[in-house]
Length: 437
Image 1 (cartoon, rainbow, N blue to C red):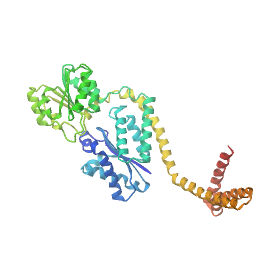
Image 2 (image 1 turned 180 degrees about the vertical axis):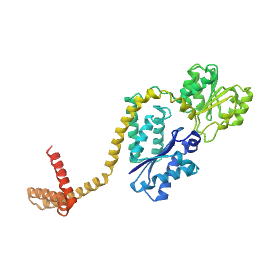
Image 3 (image 1 turned 180 degrees about the horizontal axis):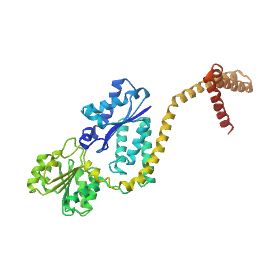
Image 4 (image 1 turned 30 degrees about the vertical axis):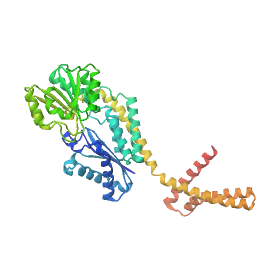
């Protein structure tokens, strides 16, 4: 069985490229089925196992396929990704990484532990990976190998976080957002803050901003009920809050000094014209806009406007690299744990290759046992002496047990004979010892 991870992330591509490769969570199961059928249809190989991890910082395809598909797995997966996302292969190729076998295992472990994240040691990626695995399982495309890989991945992440300080000294996206806003306004306490969306990232950002007691907070969301839930949570912290429909955004954008957005929209929801109108109504009072979404929620052209300070996830990434030296010791510890666990997993994969052989040997042994047992039962029913019947059955089983090995030894020569001479004593010695014990 062959493993492959093919992907793009914040190390290899800017947000302008990453947003073009991101998958809508609602269509992820459909994409997984399409990927499998694309590989099978093009190359007539068995259905591969597959999982897609798509976040603001990465889109990765994890595959496991039979050995006969190994030579075409990379090409077929890359071809599918480019076609599905309507990208020219030449524009995607420079940003893609392709990791086979142990490299794929090591990468999965590092991602889950937060070592490959923009925020080293962050925990959100682990939840996102679990969601991706759950989606693949629900779609029926998570087989034995990927299931084992990800279960081991989650165990390694738990071990690393429990035995190192990998999460210490890190600055989260949410904390970095607050710091960026403070650079412009000095204090959050005098500002009106708008959150667009109501998912996990926005909820986390809200917690950080509310801790600074802003003048007011509003939540704009497609689903009013979900936005109101977040607004109620903020109100419980004694901060004035409200929620409104996303459709009201054009008429209300000018009211806010800080806008933080993270939605699952495939297209920008805040355009240049909307912001220009808001600035006129504000008489060009500065606005801080923090776009945590991939694909982006703000049109890039907005950044060119005077009095607008627009930041993307890549901009925040520069800030959160501070403290890297303090985390280095924990990173080294984590890498050592991961390297050991990669070896363990590859040993398990190697062992899986012998499963068909073991099953064949067991089935053959069962057939021989049944044959001798049937002969013994017939003799007993005829009234033969039980002691003689048992001796004959034991002799028959022994002869059949030894026949294959002795026949191979007698008809071999040269290096093959030398190898058998070394191997056979080990096999029978192991059997004898286990029986004695």
